[in-house]
Image (cartoon, rainbow, N blue to C red; front, side, top):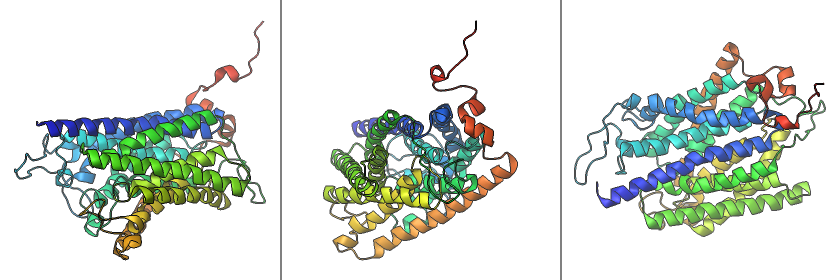
Length: 433
C-alpha cells in the first residue's frame, strides 16, 4: 500500500469517526429540545440506532446500495460477500462487485465504515421527529427496515451508479441521500403517530412545549457542526488538501450564515432571538450546503446558508400550522433544508470549482438542465421514501402498535419504556421514618 493510499485511508477513517460522533450531537439536541421526562428514551434511541444500523447495513444495506446490479438497486455483494479489498491497483482492471465505489482506492472496510456512519445518520433523523410518544420497540423495527431496505435503494440511485446518477443528479455528501431520506421517513411516522397530547388546542392554536435543557441542545449542535467537518470533506474519500479545505470552509460558512439569518428572522417574526431557531438555523445551513459543498464558491455557500436559515424558521412555523408535531424541528431542518440544498446545486454550481462534474448552475450560465435533474431527484426520492416508510409505519401500527398509552405519555416514556429517569434526584420522594 503506497503512501497516498495510506493517507487517504487515515483521512476516510477519521472522517467516519467524526460522523459517528454526530450521534452524540443528535442525542443532546433532541433530548434538550424535549421534556425531562422523556430524556432516557431519547438518548437510548440515539444510542441503539447505531447498533441497529450497523447490523442492517452490513447484512443487506451495503450490497443493495453499492453492489453491482441495475439502475434501481444493487444485486451483488450482499452480506459483504464480494471479496476483501476490491479496489484495483493502478493500471489494473476492476474485478470486484462494488464498482460504483471503486473510484476510491481505500480498503473496502474503510469505505464500508464511512458509509455506515451516513446510513445511521438517516435513521437518527427520524428519532427526533417522532419523539415523546413512540414505542421504543416500534422505533427499533422501523430503523432496521429503513437502513436495510429504504435508504440503500435511494443511495444506489444516486451514489451507486443508479438511474438518477445517469440522468445527471448530483448530491456530493447527502442533502437528499441522507437528510431528505430521513425527513421523508420521519414525516410518514409523524402522520401515523399524530401530535403529542396537549400540543394543539381544540381551536387549532399551537401550545408551545418547551425543551428542558437548552445547554444540552447547544452542546449537541456544536458537536454536529464539528461532525459535519467529517461528513462533507470526508466525502472526497481522499486526502486531497485543496478539496478538503474548500469543502470545510463552504460547510462552516453556510452554518454560520444559517445561524445568523435564523436568529434575525426569528427576532423579527417572534419578537425574540429564539435560541432553538438559532440552533436549527445553523443545522439548516449545514444540511443546505451538504449537496453542493464541493461544487459552489465560498460566497455562494454564505448565500445558501442564509437562505436555508430563513427557510427553517418559516418551515417550523408552517409545520405547526399544519399540526405536524415535530418536537425538534427535524422535518424543517432535514426535509426543507435538504430539498433546498439539493436545488441549490442546480442554482449555484460552478464548473471551475469542480471541473468535469456538475457543470454550471442556473445563476452561472448553465441553464435549466442541472436544476431540472435536481428537481426530478427530489420528487423521485420523496415519493419512494415516503410511500415505503408510510407502508412500514402502518404495518408496525397494525402489528405491534406505534404509540404509547395516554397514561404513559403523560407520565413520561422514561418510566413506561425504560423503568428509570434521567434525573431521579429531582423527583420528590417520601421520607421513610
